[in-house]
Image (tube, rainbow, N blue to C red; front, side):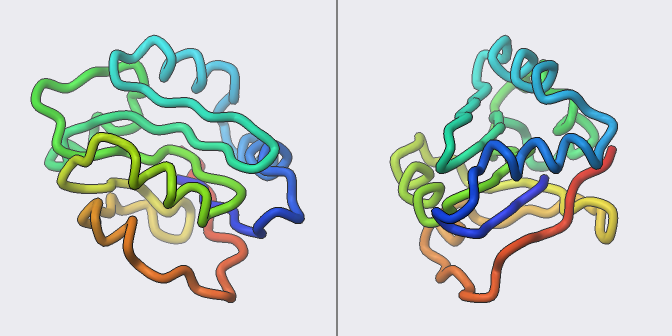
Length: 137
């Protein structure tokens, strides 16, 4: 997952494209794969960019296979999150809740991570959170 903060003073689309410039992925291909997924979700606006899908939290090897759909998903896999993180949390609170939120942090720590979905929606945002690592898989 790439997570770029910066609030409303940065265009989330430009932040997302920065992630794609640094990775071996293509934004159009990822969006197309997620739009074809039965539970894929793509939001690409100046305020917020989110690419995610439902997955099984116990199968991290399938998370980044974006068109792959799992039986009995229990988590949201966030592939990319850029822009207004408070808006992202408000949207997350309106989504069908699953047990977990899954992501990878990228080059510095590519291990799979899993957090309780409700913790993600309720945790305070850190004032110094401006940029996390990018996922270059």
